Length: 312
Image 1 (tube, rainbow, N blue to C red):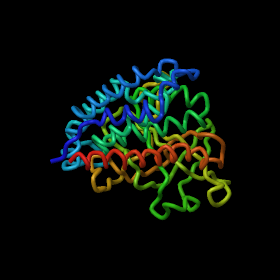
Image 2 (cartoon, rainbow, N blue to C red):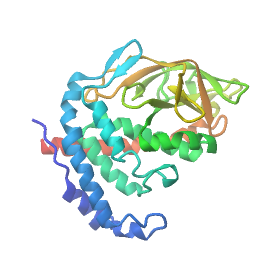
Image 3 (tube, rainbow, N blue to C red):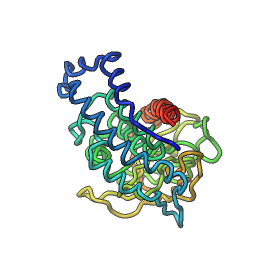
Image 4 (cartoon, one colour):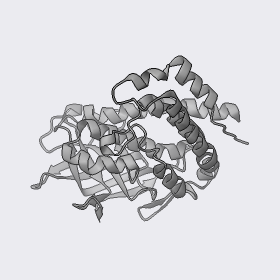
């Protein structure tokens, strides 16, 4: 039988003796990140992982996500667990205070991520990908996009995805065919299909923000002609609330070993409204912010799952 007890002593040893996190509080903007504060945060996260997330790990994988007519429902208990996760501020730990975040160092975020992935990898991918979308938007989004979307990603009300792979191309993104047509109001209409989109459709949050790689009509060939777009599931109203449904739908879900509780989706766009993130034809550098965050996340997944396997 699988067991998980957060390795708090090991984590504290790495933070205090190896990394000497006491130095963090001496840096501008991190004055609140004292060893005592970090220790308290780690202990609270451990409770959430042991008591809420880990008990859903096996049951979530056995039940899996449910797909019907473009709608995805997560396994029993996941929606309530995500509510507790978001309301506890765990989506906001390392986000900028300007957008409602706690502004703690990434070092703290990685310590927590180890426990999140160890206790429930499928669950951890939902907020994990959202934070990657937050990072990409915070660095490359316009002021208007950041003002409209970053607070929602920070508090977990909305989640994010990374849409790269298409049915005919995976590693060679220079072959992608998704198109983005400019509109008179400054938006774009996107058409095309993306596959293997983790957390592409679910019932945990009220809106899902898709970061999508696509081509403009006059784009050069290869990766030098790729742009990045923000395509929300629901188009926000002027007051920031959820508005009309956008032209993006889930066509099917995959069944990946060990993470069936995370919805891996085929996402179809048929004239979906989106907004340019960064400059035209420079989508790859912008998306690499999220891709690199995902790569670091994969490393933490290996560490976390190895910990659970060792304990079990």
